[in-house]
Image (tube, rainbow, N blue to C red; front, side, top):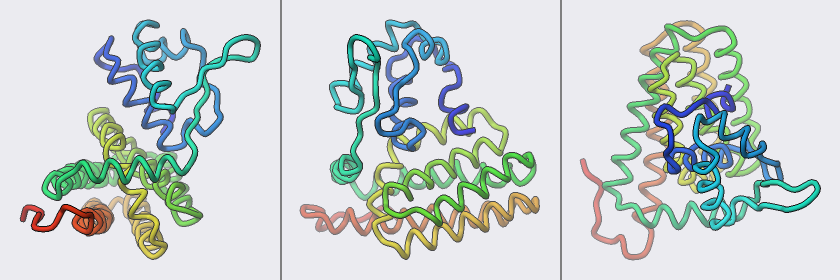
Length: 248
């Protein structure tokens, strides 16, 4: 389901930035794994409903960032190149760019999107949606490191929006992963936090399956708040952040 959502046609054709967001998210979530070859440019452009020129512009940006490598000749094409250490470096650099106030605001938006999605999912989710949520919660529980946990976390939130059967919520969930998901990598260096959130994900999946919208919403708020509070602590602990306070 995650791959279907990420590679669905774009609603606003011709925007390089929209293609970049989708591809960066797919790579960040591991939907496009390290070393994996991207589909041919004409095929990928058709999937996104953009022109080949727009897609090439997006791939050019990814190449300049070192995320994609293009090989010529026989067996050539574009390949994903993102060692796990780059996820950590990127997350630390991105966190430093946020003020505590902006960070909290972003987390509040994530909470609003995911909590609403959870409540609607309890009303609308199909059996397949529920199975996917349960499987993704288990992936979170089994994550061996922070990168694996971050990927499972982001997938869970996207699948939750998909289970709500809302195209707009799915779009918002995907957009959030581009900015927020890398930051969560830093939180999931703590094993106890990974375990606690994994447990909440399992409970959310159960609440969705049982059709208990209020419970699904509240549990989702708890999961998002847990990572938000940890991120704020990390941000305030950075040098130069003394005296900054998150908004109340």
